[in-house]
Structure formats: C-alpha cells, structure tokens
Amino acid sequence: MSRTPIIAANWKMNMGPKEAKDFLAALKNELSCECKAVDKVIVPPFVTIPAVMDTLNGCTCLGVGAQDVSDRDNGAFTGEISTTMLNELGCKYVVVGHSERRQYHGETNAYINRKIKKALAAGITPIYCIGETLAQREAGELETVLSTQVVEGLEGLTPEQVGGLVIAYEPVWAIGTGKTASAADAQAAHAFIRSVVEKTFGAEAAAAVRLQYGGSVKPANAKELMSQPDIDGALVGGAALKADSFAAIIKAAL
Ligand code: PGA
Image 1 (cartoon, rainbow, N blue to C red):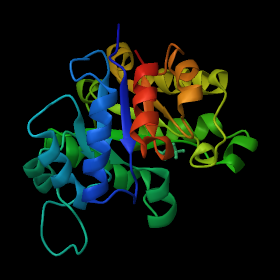
Image 2: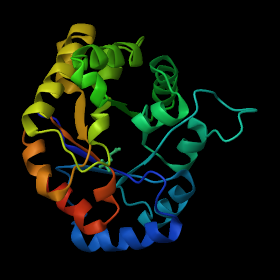
Image 3: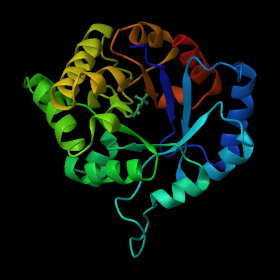
C-alpha cells in the first residue's frame, strides 16, 4: 500500500502570531501550493492558530494542528483546550503524548488514550508520539517500551481508527539534541511499531497507519530517513522554525 508522506512542523513554545505570518509568507515562496504528494502540517501554539488560519485564508495546502488537547468536553478545567474549540478553529490534527508532555506534565499512556479517543470522536487526526529514553534503550527495553505505548495508547480503538492515525516515533534522546537515530535504527523501530500494530489491530491497519520519525530531523538527514520503507514522514521541531529548512525537509519527502 502506498502511504502519503506527512511532514509536520511542531513549533512547541515558539512562534507567536506575527512570527507565524512571516514564516508562512516565506514558506509560500519556497513551496508550490499544488503539490499534493506530501501532506504538510503546521502545529503552532494554541494562541497562534487563528493567525495561521487567517494567513492561509482557506488554502488547504497546509493542514493545521494543535500541540495538545483536553480529554474532557468542557467545564472547570483551567488552562485546557477542548476538541470543540479546535474544530471551531479548523484544526485537522492534534499532537498527543509528546515526550515533553510525558516528561514535564506527567502524561501517562492511559491519559493519552483518552485524548486520542476525544480527538477521533471530534474528527481530528491524532499524531500520537511514542519513543524510548536513552536509559530505556541502553537497558534493552526499546521493544517493551514501544509496544506498551502502542497497546496502551491505542487501547479500545477500531482497526479503521488506527489505520487513519499518525504515529510519531521520537526517541527521547534524539529530540532537540542534534543526535538523530541512524536510518537503520529508525527503520528497525518503525518496522517493529508496525508489527505491533499488525499483531494488535490487523494487517490492514498496519499497512495504512502512517509512521513519522522525529528527533533532530534536518534537511541533511531527512531524505535518508524518509527513504526507509516504514518511515512515512517526519515530525520536525527545531528545523521547522525556519521556512527554508522546513521546505527543504518537505522536498526531501517527494
Ligand atoms: P526536534 O524536535 O526536531 O527539535 O528534535 C522534534 C519533536 O520534538 O517533535
């Protein structure tokens, strides 16, 4: 099965509305809007999403996502953002379970599972982040960690729902460190993740689910990583803060 590559810019706590507008103007000069061969997604901070939508002005060449979402519908949950609010803004994607949320906000697989279900119920595609720490990799726990994250994070989903997901494999030791997993190590982890999806949800879901690599992706390593058979795109942090390097990564997926 051929899977459309998906490249997402995770801006984290960077890029206010003004910077985002400048970025999009610069990106427009670098990319042709027509290119449908790659799905391109911008994931700004919540407060920047309206400015991104205004600038896109209905153009669907870029999908827009949020960096997190509440597992609740509405009510007294200070600081939280609901799927209804994301829908109102026109967000098509939401990143859930990013390692920084797991590390700094104590998010567990069970909690992330509730967010994934909320997003799916609202018609928003989750980009579900998983990945091992360096200590876990060195202790030989890579496969246990990944399979637990897949099984617990996706618990209760149908094979169809899983097939429509994006799963981002982001080894924690590679995020923002400049250290990238080798293409061979990344491919091995992705193949393993796909095998867990197959065992848990069946062959069709495994063939359809898109697996992104994340962790110090940059123009210089993007092509080799994305030419691996089980790597269907990239979740890009630091290198997605500049339009020229983000555009170069998108072009590497073509
Ligand atoms: P990085 O971040 O590209 O800066 O390593 C990736 C991510 O955390 O999604």
